[in-house]
Length: 436
Image (cartoon, rainbow, N blue to C red):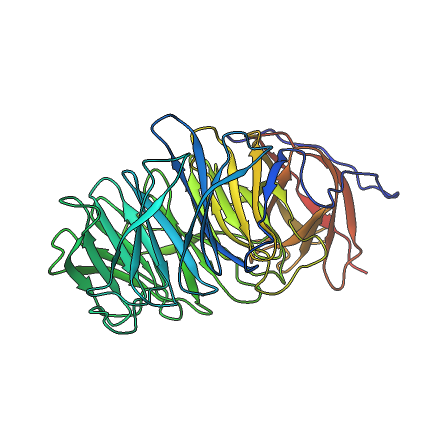
């Protein structure tokens, strides 16, 4: 909703405001799990709900997959462990009562029967007919296919694209119905037989996979600085969210309503020097595993200005580097959020659903009233500044509270003001900078 106008007075004194060292008030740590008896090092995480309603985290480790009962999130307990080939990469997805596991260690796709949890789980097959190593996978439960991504070594039939494994007839013994082999697919998201492939330096493609034997590219989006690592579609299908896995790589929000005119609608960063890893959309929030910046919950109510609504930094001493939070899973019915941390294992969080607040406005020259481009807007506690555009317009946001906001531009006196952000509202603060 559009908010109310705000009258502000420049401040002369520093204001005491909220500074959250490790996490915001809206995100609470509920529990942790790490098995120090096995090889340390963790990768992806997924979730599963048993027939009895119990909830599980499926945690990739260097040595296999740990299946952890998180029904009582304060006391996670390992129910089973599925050994696999040693690898720092391991991803898991589920279909029916089975888990499917890919790894760069080779050997094919492991298939695990989860139906006997919490007593046990066991490996029932390894599909290796057309897949050896694979980087990631995505399973669309609606169409019953596993999309195996980045299977580049023998015996892969996709040359690093996507292998389409049909799970419908027999989930334990899938069959391959086709491949996408035009470009390397690092990751994918599929809905209604449309695949959105993350292709690293090639950006992303949108592919019609209705006919698995003859996939058709509907659009491809390349963009400067692309290293498109993963992506997720918003619930309404209007926006595709991508992550660039490089220093300074962040969340990009693409408007895809017109495939002939895909354009960047908004961006979010937790910190200008940080690296984002994986992102997942659910309702009006996006959940990111942000490597050294931990869990980030992003308010997407205004996709042109995504802003942070909650956070928990699993390593507050780090900012840069591809270390820390690898995977995120926000889809369990209880609402708990799972994070896999590369060094410290499974973290379980709650998020109270609080919407963020936003500030928009125009920065002008106080003397001429001309708009000022390139002014830097900083909000206390938020390490990611905003910059005014060619029309002097800016937008920034953070969890609801009172903050000190500063506006600076070379050649002008700095401007400082107290702003009170209101949950789910946008306030307007126009700024006049006085020339030096």
